Image 1 (cartoon, helix red, strand yellow):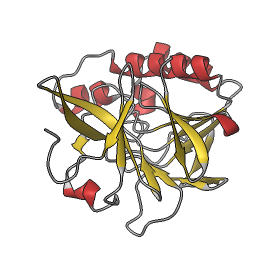
Image 2 (spheres, rainbow, N blue to C red):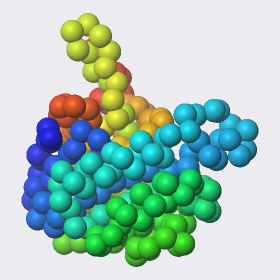
Image 3 (tube, rainbow, N blue to C red):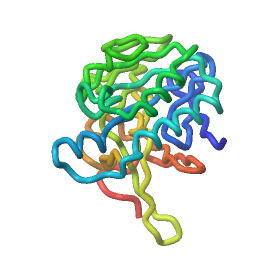
Length: 226
């Protein structure tokens, strides 16, 4: 697997092509904004019709990342389900897959704004969690907290490659905080030049674009790269 190794708060981390984060020293895999059941919620409330296999696709990606990293710990950074109680609306096959993935793994659900944590499922439920120099939560605090790792914003970035615009979900990080991309299929995203993100990140922040070969670029700020 092609991963991009980078340093954050003196820890060596790996950005995976899928948008997951791996911390080898802690055998820890971190994912954010799975939004499982997004198509089920849309169907229930008359929203946009999405492919019904999005949850299966997300769980398959997660299974592959667990296998490739051999992670023994998992942190889901909130909005794991697209709405409260949706875990009970998932097909039995998806619930079985999720339960199988959790077997033998120290699994932590961080509360999100879409869901308070799937309390019917196994694992530990936390508002935030500190591991060594890093603190994991769903939404970045306005006041910088050194070592903060969060999600919520679904960041994406655009650059020009051989005359074509390439847009991908991305990690954003500076010396203080790290924001993960959305891991779930069909989750959409917020451009890194959006004020909601430029207000959070320092002028020296960088972006790691996901995809088959993750690549690091200066974080696109108030205008797209050209």
